[in-house]
Image 1: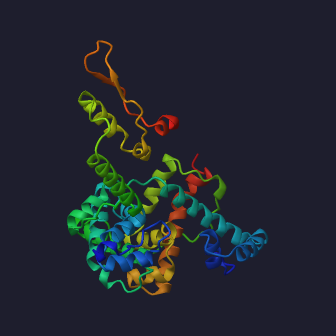
Image 2: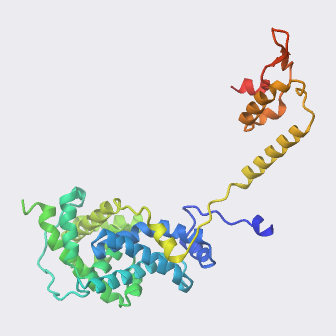
Length: 198
Length: 159
């Protein structure tokens, strides 16, 4: 009876990840589900960008959260759920890639374009279907590792320290990889952003 | 990438990670510096593309797969305690009301009508304060009674 009367704090959108992680670690499934709902969109998009197949991304997303649930007790930094779960997602994606033996994990060429690239007008960028197609193609030209690092930084807003921790890289390596990824992406997108090809 | 040495700061501005004061200061510099302007244009273009893409994701049904893999079950959200208490009190009062001698018991024919009304009005607390006022009268034929439904005045007023 006392157990029934015990108040469980209500989970709201303002409940911080840190509190949810603590509660999930104590076995509260609703807290883990709240973490899932909060981060599943990011994780799924990250995996789709890495795997480039929606059905694979769906499966990998479920696997990522299943592993996250299994290993949650190990997460000591309770406020770093997002970088932690994206790190798991990266491992899941790379395992899937090895199974499929498609992409290379590392870039073979480091001959990133060094010429000065004209700059686009950010206020005129409209990501229509055509541009999104070129964007996806451009992302596909990056190695899986480099792409993952770029996505973590640009799409998911992780800091260089978090990315370094997730990859087991040094911070300068992360910066260098993201820098090279950006140059390659820009070179690929430029004609479509400035209308040079029309 | 900007040879001006401010790439990291520009990136923080494009990602919305700086304070408004720092952002203003850097933007003032960008107006004067072609290299930084070029870099910030690219950074903001990239951010804009990622942002626009982010709004298009669908993740319906994925939780079920996680539940299945981990054998999780999330308990349905319990009713607010106040509502539960109110419902319990209402049920209790109705049961007490039923146990008390019914003033309209002489009209046996009316029971089913009252039952129907009672069940449809249980939701209203007004039901608990009805005022019986000559609920039954003799039929025009002179045999038996016809009973008008017992509807509390307060309930009618609320309509």
